[in-house]
Image 1 (cartoon, rainbow, N blue to C red):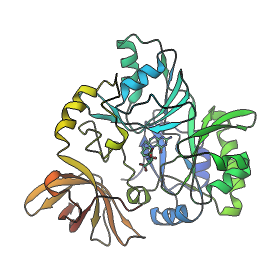
Image 2: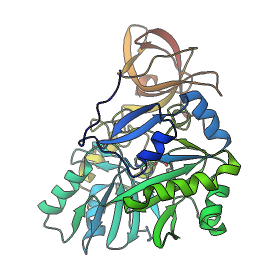
Image 3: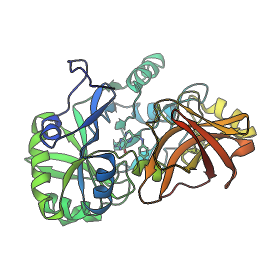
Image 4: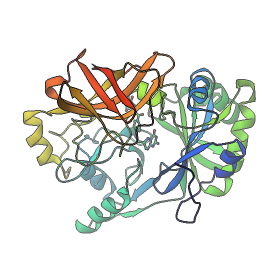
Length: 367
Ligand code: THG
């Protein structure tokens, strides 16, 4: 890969000027928008994320807003997670499935009010599915993509940095809850969440005009903590078992195959469009499932296609994301493995684009 041609179709974010000034060195495209992937190097970014604090432009996590009297009904139609106990001020990690039980997205849903929700989406055009469901069922809702851009503050020093900008009360925000905080006369929803296992917050900026003011205020407040621009880290997220839609799962997979069964209550999620399909497959149980895979390698190429997982001559699965972990001293990977070979400790071979390596199956990820 050489470089990406900029155009209007490839959307910038309210923070792109800050990201560029900070010396971004690689992007991916996510929801048709720029998403930084590397600043200094993936390894340097990783070490710094685990020791300090970073500001992440994750505006590419676009919001699908659902508003109106049927909002709660529509959101429940999307997911096998039972949302009846969810209160305004809460966020849920929520598998979204189609009529076959296939994964369409794995967003975080934010309940602003009974009649107002944000679906903070991974990389698929979920807006069109949600609009189609709303229209097809004649629901009394408005569905659109608002001008809302998440900015994440991640790392062990995130609480100290955030307290400097928004006051000490941000320290009391509980995991996957959010509160409202003022910045330049506007109210921002701030949640304790984010795509790393290092702790931190996500700020949902409504109104892109003040994006750079927010970015600069956070950078300034973080100076004592060695703050840097960062981004979701390809090594750390695999160590943490955070899945990537489109990489580690597609609409060919059920939530159970993805290891997301703990976020499903299919029996009681009445109204979920994929419910019957999931109840049918749940009876048998999945025949393949996501597993942590340790790879006995010192270097690995980029995982830009599935790498076969072999038991002798037999293909028993595939690796979809992989990296060398400085902290664990081996390759760490996300695999989808057939039932016959998914037990902890199973020895396999992985065929990368640059050679084959010994690989071992684990039931839990590293962090
Ligand atoms: N934050 C927000 N939106 C997002 C993401 C995010 N949209 C895209 C993408 N990330 C969606 N995917 C995930 C995957 C994992 C998690 C969040 C979003 C996650 N999982 C935790 C875990 O598995 O340990 C906690 C889940 C829980 O316990 O509820 O955080 O990151 N706004």
